[in-house]
Structure formats: C-alpha cells, structure tokens
Length: 222
Image (cartoon, helix red, strand yellow):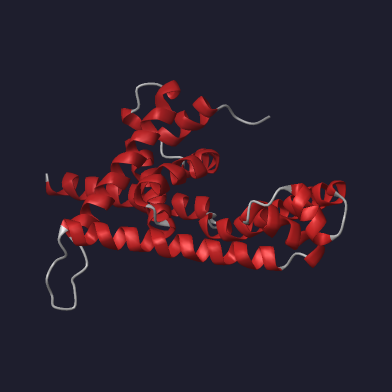
C-alpha cells in the first residue's frame, strides 16, 4: 500500500532521501512548470527545479504542516526562478563593442526572438499545408486564405458545394492531426529526463552529507 504524502514528508524531514524521491516524482513537473513559466528556458528551468527540491529537502524541518507543502514548494521554486532571471538581467550579454545593451535594445532583441519563433512556426505550418493532397489543399486555400464562399469555390473547382464542404472538413481534420503531432514533437524538448528524480535524490544526499560534515567540524573546534 503506497505511503501517504504526510508520511513521506515526515520520513524525508528525518533525512530519508529515498522517501523524498517519491515526493520529487509527484511534484517534479509542477515545479518545473513554475520555473519554466518565469525563465522561459527549459535547461535553466530544469536546473532550478532540481535546486528547488534540494533546498526543500534541507528545509523540511521548517515546514509548518504537510498540507502547506505544495504552496511552500511552489514559493521556493518561484523565488529561485525570479532570482535566476534577475541575475541574467544583471549579467546581460555584452555587445560586440563590449557595451551593455540598454533596456530598449534588450526589449527589441526579445521581440526579434519572438518574431523569429513565429516565423519558424509559420514555416512549419506551411509545410503541413503543402503535405495535403491537392483535393484537400485547394479548397482550404480558396475558402480560408482567400475568403472565397464555398459556392464559388465549388463552381471554380467543378464540384458540388457539398463536396467542397466535405473536403474542407477532411482537410481541417488532417491539419489538426498533423499540427498536434508537430507540437508534440516540439514539446519533447521540454520533458524532464527520466532520471531527474534520481539526480535530485543524489543532490539531496550530497547536501545532507555536507551539512553533517560541517556540523561535525564545528563540534570538533569546540
């Protein structure tokens, strides 16, 4: 029988990294999503998510109650993501001349990146449209891109209006399927690695060992 979250948190607070691993597996994508929304960078969001769990493991003794854990964890993730973004703003890339970009220039670069992403997406959509058969593509181009009424499109193509509507329906369906597949393929880069939880556990254990060693050194000096 699976352990309840409060039991896992209690054992984790005692230093049980394996129990905390179950917590990581449950919340890893929620934490990752919080970071990704703020930093807009999958690699950085992954690092922030791992740091969040390591910090949470070390600070579990400060948790007021198990019920507060989700919001407490989210706050840690958000603060770390905001700190990362603030540091990136402080260490803005240098221009070729070695001068820091002004806020206006940085904003323009962000807009340029967004335009490039939009252009790349549109290019992919054009490929998807081009991959349709002529029978499906022409009605879509006529009716949706050129705004031609279905009746006129039917006369132009030499088919019935009902046939035009059927081809529009089939064409939209194929477009939706292929665009969804394209999006799924693109979203793969946002997936966490399969061993993410294991990495977090290792990080928690290293942090715990370092803390124990530090505490021992202090005791010896006394």
